[in-house]
Image 1 (tube, protein in one colour):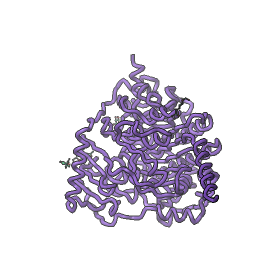
Image 2 (spheres, protein in one colour):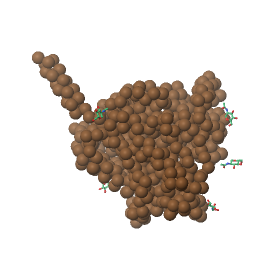
Image 3 (cartoon, rainbow, N blue to C red):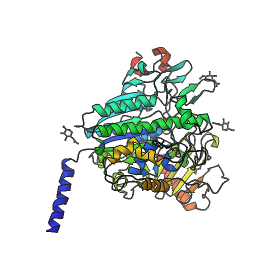
Image 4 (cartoon, rainbow, N blue to C red):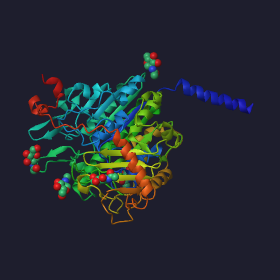
Length: 546
Ligand SMILES: *[C@@H]1O[C@H](CO)[C@@H](O)[C@H](O)[C@H]1NC(C)=O
Ligand SMILES: *[C@@H]1O[C@H](CO)[C@@H](O)[C@H](O)[C@H]1NC(C)=O
Ligand SMILES: *[C@@H]1O[C@H](CO)[C@@H](O)[C@H](O)[C@H]1NC(C)=O
Ligand SMILES: *[C@@H]1O[C@H](CO)[C@@H](O)[C@H](O)[C@H]1NC(C)=O
Ligand SMILES: *[C@@H]1O[C@H](CO)[C@@H](O)[C@H](O)[C@H]1NC(C)=O
């Protein structure tokens, strides 16, 4: 009797699951150049991110989520499910005015999701080509695009380019959006995302990629020819972050804070629309932070080694936080090896597709790993092969060992940099702010298992980074390097001489990948693209130039 009741209940639950087993909406919030240390759950009190933290404590932190070391390669990997070496995208990111785009024989994530009836929208950055309309987001599977085509733009003027070669890159599909000039980019993208969430007809599942400018640098400083950060409001910034002595770092904090608020607003909109329960949310950065140098944004990857561009953990071990009510455990720290190329097959699977239909791609379905914590099938991941710079890297042996050969920009970015954020000058971690955050309030409606003050403190303690730079001083040269990431996540000790077999095996793997590498497809800037010819607006110049 008892048993049949149990089975009846089970059946009921299963039926309910099937009847309402709708394809999930997928919302990916992608940020640009966020530092590993610049979210509150990693233990820094300097820049507190209550909404992102609430997502982490209610969801899962993908603790070993790897990306490419720079923008264009990372985004190509995300959208194609392939290593950039398969398409010649492994080198320097696309420059404004360069005619390069992802090959049409590779399907993109929104194209794949369209097979499953998803409607897809891109809000914000593209950076995968715009010489032709068919190279832009709406040519590559998105139903709409609101945002910019190139690598960055001013937060307020929405321009990119060098003096004499500079123009507006804010577009509503193909229409330049002059009305938004002077408005803060993070707000514009947030508002557009909310509008899409509110107006979407959920008979079809939604894929929304919100690809923020923040916290990348934007405006060109004509005195230095470097790009710089702009705060939303100096008054608010100084009131809130006055304890940060360096005004440039303060500006970065302000920008990250706006992103955090944006996530709160987006999750709140999903909740108000009544679709949060059936939505998977991923918050992630395309690569690590850039503390100084080219596009310096004063981010911090502490305690990890290396900045953006390098093959060290600081460049490629990205921040990634996932939420779905189908997670079998709340607040999981997922230490399985996951690569950015895995997102395409994983979301395809989540949408009801069979990843076997995707053909030969580098990405692997990780849905069960993410939802249930099951071991990852991924045993290795190629960091990258930059055949122009002779800069290679791979992680093998179930994620334990990393081989690097070569460097980039003469070792400039290979060390340890950025704020630690644990000093007494910083405010205490505000647990109430996490509890009261928009994200937590929205998620608390979905679950009986709500966060508590103690629960948050405990989760943060498990998640926070500890200093692991014990073997200083380091030898910067990697010709070659081998690191044991399990014992030495800060990459302080080169064990290439101690482990010759492992070294040789990983070198061989690089050689195998190299055999099938498509050479870099980078092209010089096409002078015809000059926005000065088009009333200072970036266009799909090879379509319009008759
Ligand atoms: C997509 O929609 C069409 C038409 O409504 C339907 O026939 C088809 O089964 C749907 N495909 C999936 C994967 O849900
Ligand atoms: C900045 O770049 C422009 C052209 O792109 C060049 O003419 C100018 O000299 C550069 N300025 C500095 C300070 O390097
Ligand atoms: C490592 O890089 C150096 C410099 O580019 C090169 O001379 C050497 O052949 C590389 N070693 C391997 C094993 O690829
Ligand atoms: C790297 O160093 C070499 C030799 O010192 C120099 O010629 C080259 O310009 C430097 N490259 C960069 C990107 O700094
Ligand atoms: C903590 O956050 C809450 C909610 O945002 C706020 O009301 C409170 O003033 C904050 N406490 C401190 C000490 O900043």
